Image 1 (cartoon, rainbow, N blue to C red):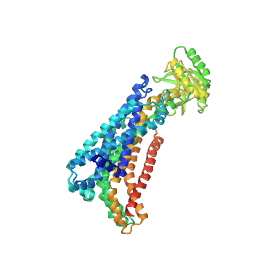
Image 2: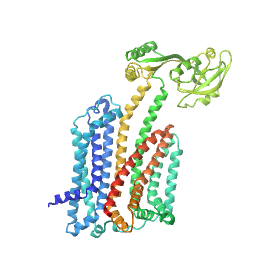
Image 3: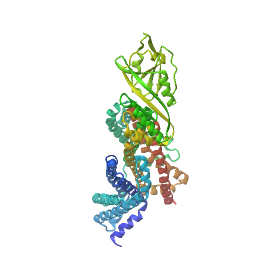
Image 4: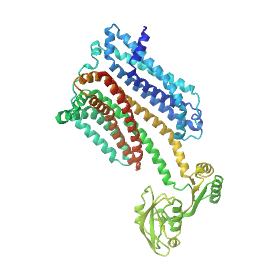
Length: 621
């Protein structure tokens, strides 16, 4: 048997452990290849898309490539940790350390080659579906048809072969300092039960409390000011949480004899306590990576929701036209003609809105009939105002801050009558940039001369709504942008500009989250052989299969959900801070993002627990 054949057999014999490494690496290659397909797609490389989409794809691919290097490196270190005893036995049989390093190099290159080829093949298979998905997320007018991406294939293959080559060299190099006695003993060397430092334990709680308080209490621009300090404080607090506070809690639970000696708690917590040092570092890494994924996707999703919602709020009508000068009648004729061509039926309202000088401000005063006419277009409540009264209208959804000032002002008519403000209502009927007054028609006729006037016309579609976007695009090209507005078209342009950012952030977040789950898988299976021996011995003492399943389920659940729970909490606080920044409720978006990730983790946990339990049960039978 040749040396190369021996290395190949080693991979096949360790397929259980290598399977996660191979599949995770292949997934990373596939994601990178997917971005390469977009980066080289003929539609996305066109002049009008080059600046927004292609740059985003290139940056995203670079981030994934750098992250892939560290991810693969971590994966390989987990394999080497679990194969110490194997290397020691090979050295006892006469294999030199140089030959072991050569074997590891060949194994890693073999896996890297097939992972690269497999990632490219699966990327090609799923490319059409991903391209269809991207058409909707990126809001691209032209279809992203499937093509044979030779440039993407070449870039991906060369990039990842080089990546695996350098990682293989690095991993082979770090094996040179291993001593035979350390390799033979493997993980049997006692690390000693970790002890918590009281000062660092209290510091962990203090740092997290201060970080959370600063993030939740900050409002507006203050959120940006405290962001960096909060991130640093919370990261340090998270590390101490897993390395100190968790150890402190476990030791406290062990001292509680009622709890510790109940059922199988002895097996669970005594084992967890001895392995806490290694798990703590893994927990910290997974918590930070998962938090980045939650915050990236949640922030981008929330920001898009904020932008589109604010656009819809400020543009309740299907079309609006406003002008203080120019050929108003000609522009209105163009709009009506376009709506007729697109078979869009509308309800319309028009008025000359007049502004008056009140307390050195330019304030809109509308008469009751005009206000009710426009309120009827958007199904808003109409109002009934008596002579001698005035109503302040504040824009529904946004507070511009002028309402309190208007409450302290009065409106004096030419007749000498002074109008008093009776109430404040909230509406989006008129296009005011601040709060304004509404008075009765009779009182409106006695107002002094206006200081400014604006012609305003609104259309609300009742049929042919599918053609609204087409009509809006035509009219936006023919009319002055700041005069003609279409809420639906503004949302379309917002999504089109924001789509590449959301698409990039979504994929990077998914890569980070899948990698975090893979770290947990590697941590669990690194100790598989040790767990087999331990439970095999305990089974001889009378451990039932039901009790075994219970212990393994709890052990796996702690491994999987302890860091994810912390990450979810971090993510919820971060998204709440983002909501405070924009003064916009992100509860729905936060629940959706965090809920989806939590469900994915549950599915991942069920699958891993099934195969892990199967391995342990097979070892004790």
